[in-house]
Image 1: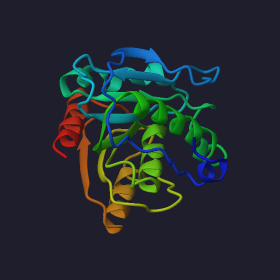
Image 2: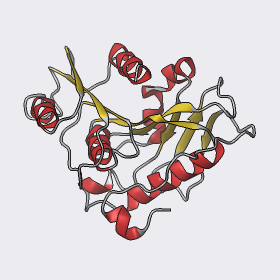
Image 3: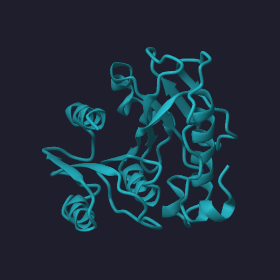
Length: 231
């Protein structure tokens, strides 16, 4: 488990095992039972095609403000079995993520604990380990992904509002999407500001705008996963 000091820096210290577990492990959807907050569970979805000893791609998927893991599950679950994708879906302790309501700490600890449990039971490909999310979850994904670019190879940011990394570590590849008609997080002051900042900092960014509002169209989710699969 990450120390309190490192959690306050937004740092995730756990890493995928170098020798992948060979024992059979459960597939499908389950709660992790990580002393979940009253607002909801922390969920793990392992695709039906997972085979022990074969490293799988994985995404830590983060909900938007006021959401929870179950509300976010369907964002990528329809694509998980086809792409062999493990999904770790935590729920924030408060109505949104810690960096937005007081600073890094409690949610970093929970995510670190979830990763530790997954890495101890499943083979995860360290070259295909992403953090992603929608809305506030996208903002948090960018923030954590940049702070922990030595852990995450990719970041998926669907309609982010901002980014607040504690540090710039590593060089994850980044996918950003945003609706041109978004009335919740307006594209002009959000992604159209964020993407040039990322590119100016040297990140490899794939950016997609679409006609629509504050949502993730299925075709955008599919493009993001295909981009992730391609490395």
